[in-house]
Length: 211
Image 1 (cartoon, rainbow, N blue to C red):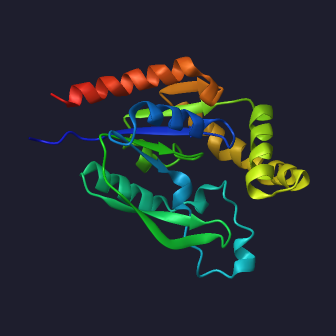
Image 2 (image 1 turned 120 degrees about the horizontal axis):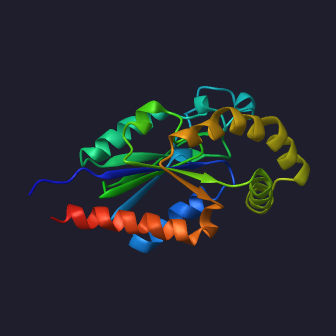
């Protein structure tokens, strides 16, 4: 029996927009039997050849921070029903870990990340493009709460990074990709109607692929 081409869904949005919550909500409705999530954050470039002190200055909100060549190759492999070894990023060392995660292809592949709609090569592979659009004040509050609780950051350091890096990168690179979206979801994971509509669409695709 001929295998169907996996469906590729891109989910983008600014830091703290709720794109991960949207992705997780969709994933939980189907489980890992049908849907695979590939996070762009796992594909930050290897920096082991750069001195540690220089790695501390990495701008993780710039397109150059990502190894999209590898990500594009992995998506092609998954489309051809081949397994991949997804890289793991070590945020303490600011470089790629020696560990990998073995990933088998699935019927639906969600690509999630702030700049997942920025690379035309990835755009051309997507069947559905989603942008999670959340007000800037909500995004900074969410980011602040996350970074203080999970990453031990201070309020001042979060604000400084937001003003000097996150906000300008969002305006320059993330926000413009909204024009490529087929679907815009306001307020992220709180928008249950939009998430249910996405889940219904995915279920329709899965049902169609059964025949």
